[in-house]
Image 1 (cartoon, one colour):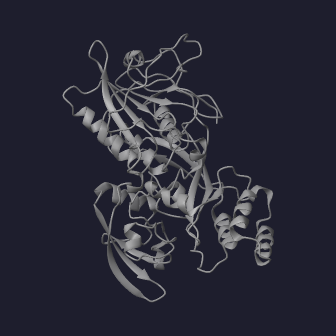
Image 2 (tube, helix red, strand yellow; image 1 turned 30 degrees about the horizontal axis):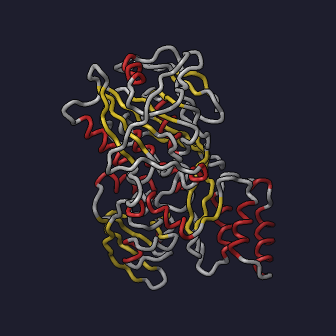
Image 3 (cartoon, rainbow, N blue to C red; image 1 turned 120 degrees about the horizontal axis):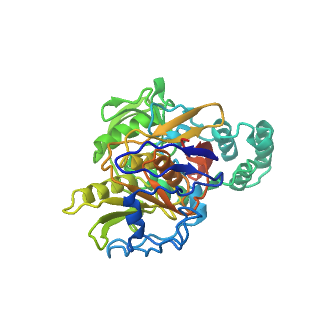
Length: 454
């Protein structure tokens, strides 16, 4: 949404004025007062390429910069299709709406834990219940959702294919981002699993407010190998109770210690059996054969001033950790850079949580995004983690920078921590959660809207 220019207090370098100027997307910061460091940055010839940098329409010809050559071991990132922006901005470890907002801040104001759909429920009824409990528009695009249920159940009883019916039901919502995805696509989303054991958990859905497994574990994951199943209650994780634990709390606990394995104490309600299992965490094995989430290097100008360049392909479970490691490595080098460029051009998004963690690399506990679930709950989420550097940052964006990329850039810009260079972003403004279905397919559903802090 349009918002007035912000008055930024000067940090350690002269800050540019912050602005947001488009309801379609975020635009690079404009104004007459770029800091000297940023002027040098934009003049460097080996940062990242863009035919014209939209810093200001009145600034005249812009510098042409050349695309960096990636290291031989790190193939250049491939372009993402625009449709990829719709894939799970917020795929987290939980399946209800808290999935979509499990991120930094003081709590999960948008959490609406819902009961696990019983086994044997027709697929169309399963999809109907998930939409009823979690879709961002409580008016369901003007549809009487109870009548929709009766219509589709009648068509299912008459013999129409349930997979086709489920997809047609979701289309009634009139939401370009909500859709049923295939089993193969659903399984590929393991790279957005922040705890890395291949299981989706719902807070408050187990006995006495504990967590529960809400979909069958991803094939090949440690959770699948350990025999976890949909409906199992997870009573403890590494000896700590999950009772009344939010998605945010669990992810913070795991990311802080970053263990190789997690011990789950699991209860199977159908038999009363209780056991402990050790689950080894995956490091984006599903994505290991493709380009890494992040690559980086340090370039220098003729005067020897350094620019740390970091390219982020997508906000997967590895991206924030790799970004932090890259900046830590450059800061600890013999000649650390004087400024940074974070290149998120073509980055369609990924995990909401990971964008907040990335913001924490450059600023501490600063508001990054405001989220509204459409049902009266709204929360502001902040950057997470200890900053690595306070040096100038530019965020490189284009029209394919979407979802979590817009969360990262919008938060950096509104906090006056980074200037934007490039073009207007995609302008998605929606958060999706991914729900596992009984037939092992998935439902991508819009569960919230987001705007930049200003």
